Image (tube, rainbow, N blue to C red; front, side, top):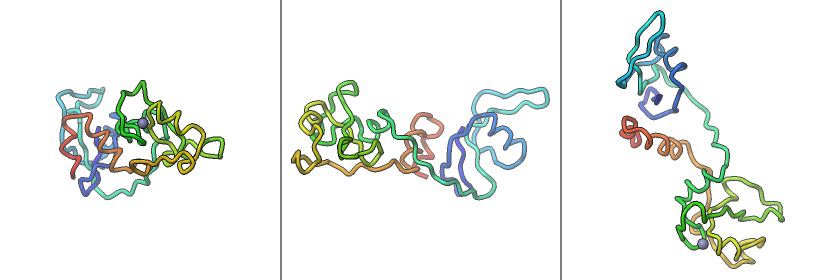
Length: 162
Ligand SMILES: [Zn+2]
């Protein structure tokens, strides 16, 4: 279920149970419903797919945990050194500042690398390896995460550019 803020900006995805409580509590407006219905002893409700809050809510943004899949997605499955796209199973994660030199596993220090580039860089810092990145690695923003999520559901896609 997609939750929009008052301004119609996509805010987050929410589980059905929690969303239904908000709908029944009159705290949200149902913008779109799906085909199914939700039943309980007390009510029958057209399944909400998109709901909109009645008043503005500031939701602090917590960046998602940095995972292999997340880094590959952010980098669009392309080696950040040479641009190769050999497929997920042939890609590795490279620590820009090597772990041996105190580099950590964060969004800003991990990039997608093909195997040849990873072994060429090995445990060296960028300048020693004489390699450069095609783009600076960043932590995914809320807008970026929402785009990824919204793309999964046809009903939600039209809210991507809101
Ligand atoms: Zn490469």
